[in-house]
Length: 273
Image 1 (cartoon, rainbow, N blue to C red):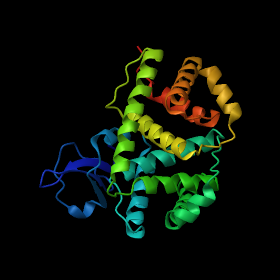
Image 2 (image 1 turned 120 degrees about the horizontal axis):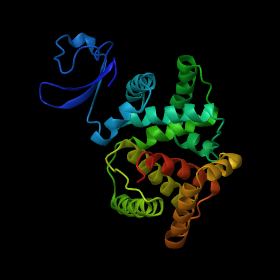
Image 3 (image 1 turned 120 degrees about the vertical axis):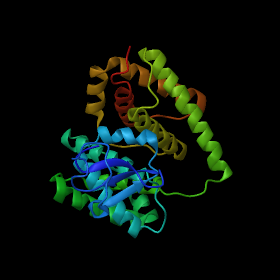
Image 4 (image 1 turned 180 degrees about the vertical axis):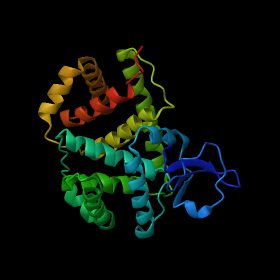
């Protein structure tokens, strides 16, 4: 994937991501005989997430691998193997937002910290580490996006209600995707990571809508600017908003529409016909 990250098969034929200085320098494929060269490994990463390795900065992926290692030794539950890449994606997006002066507010930050004290303490340490490593000072409220990355990566058994909600979410995701394809005259490649990223955002959006929560980022000017820059995408998001209101009685705020617009535009990049 880069000079220090490679996809391997172990002696049992299991696929894994291996981190180690210079592992990617040699001509591929080759056999790693000196196991001391491997600093850390990640098994069972979902195939659809692997493409993200080509879109994320290598230094952020390596940083996230260190964070995941530390989190596994700190948090009292099992974490999904996909956390490596979802966390890297979140951190990369947070740094990008900072550079564009898009500020994300978390109205329920106190509730999150009260409910997830261990994850909150860990997230604050990560913000300090990001400053030291990348010289980017992220706002304190970005810590709670990191908290949710850990919470959503927790591996647990789902009850019957959760299974029903998951099925409904999949149906809504399909219907929203159909709206995008029809209105923007495109065919979305569901095997690409941009689709996984977009689908994850829709999942979190639906979760917030069911709880009556919403993002508050005070980015009205950014929303207006993006609507002017991408009028077709903005019109598509309006259609999605009407669909969610009409069929499920969900009220999608302009703040939520802003982030939905960003993800719709991203998932359609290089896909329009």
